[in-house]
Length: 94
Image 1 (tube, rainbow, N blue to C red):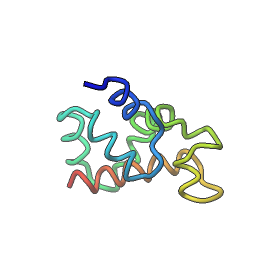
Image 2 (cartoon, one colour):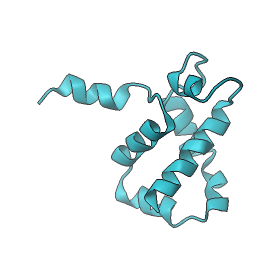
Image 3 (tube, one colour):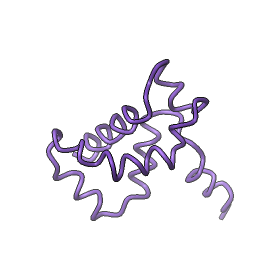
């Protein structure tokens, strides 16, 4: 098995929201996925200071040269991007 390629897929910064969602689905355990899928969409904001922080930190969303931020255009805030990813994750899990 090519471990370096596998690790690169886990550690490199996602370039799109879809790629970020795919990455999250691959690393979240079933209990966390179930917790998210059973939430109401309006309650996803409650993940802002937990999963949202992890997304912002793990995906480097505070880096202005981040390819994911750049894919969304100018003047996007890391908080907004993490919530966009959480919403997309929730929808994908439905």
